[in-house]
Each structure stands twice: as C-alpha cells, then as structure tokens.
Length: 183
Image (cartoon, rainbow, N blue to C red; front, side, top):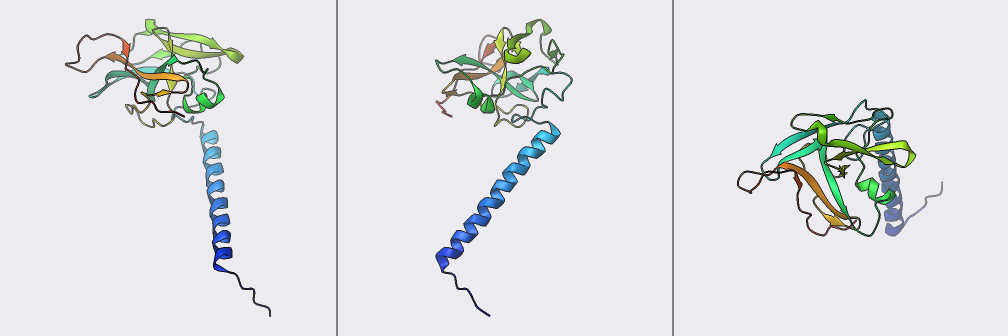
C-alpha cells in the first residue's frame, strides 16, 4: 500500500476548497429558499405571490411616525446615475401585484396620498404624495431605518408623516439623507 504525503500548505488549500464549496452551496440554498417562499431582500412578500400591498404608519421615538410596508419605505432624491439593476437589488421598488391597481392604505395612512407610476413591463410602482416608494434590503423588521443614506443613485429618506415630539411642525416630509454610504 502506498501512502500519499501532503504538505501543510496542500492541506490548507484542500480545506479552503471545501470551505468555499460549502459557503457557495449555503448561499445558493438560501436563494432557492427565498424564491420558494416568495421573499424579496426587504423581507416583504414578492409581488407575484401577494394579493395586495399595504402601506401603514408606525410610530418611532427617533424618526417620528414613518411609513412601512412590512419594512420601512423610502423615497429617492436622484443623482445623475439612474437606479438600475444593481440599485434595485439594494433598493427594491414597492410594486403592486399583477392585476392590482392601487395600494391599500393601512393604519394612519391617507388613501388619497397613495398612487402609482408606470414602470417598464406594465409594472406599477407605489407612490406616496407623488414620490415613488422603495424598500432597503438591509432593513429586516418594521421600524428599522438603516436606509437614510446618500449613495451612487442619490439621497434616500424614510417617509415621515409626523415628526417626533419637540421637533417642530408636523407635516408629511421625508427625513434628511445621511452619511454618504456608497454601494
């Protein structure tokens, strides 16, 4: 019987290959699970499986009363760089399911301020007070607000309907953009 000897560097390379393959398999599996259960990066049901989109308000101590649809929704003050495929992986549009013409106003939301804009392929994106709405993929829970940032595509802001107590006038506004995060 012949015994094959391996050097420590060969063993490390073999271990890295196994670890890399395992990591790739886990990543692929998580993507398949997301597709199977119909979840987009923002944790909201995919539009082709959902029967409606509900826009509600949520009171937070930091931001005041904000709009959510499962997670916080944002508006964009665009830069010169259009929000395309790479952008929509981080900032998915709040779109209506096929056949649905209007979002549902949930608790604390004015139905009159909800609307839509047409996107390519006959898709309708939800608007609030005339501004297109987006989710931020890293937000995973209602009230989580990680997307007040300025990036390649512009300045993103959560939608505030009532500012926190002591902050002045209470009107429908968007929070100011934040700290220059680039993607």
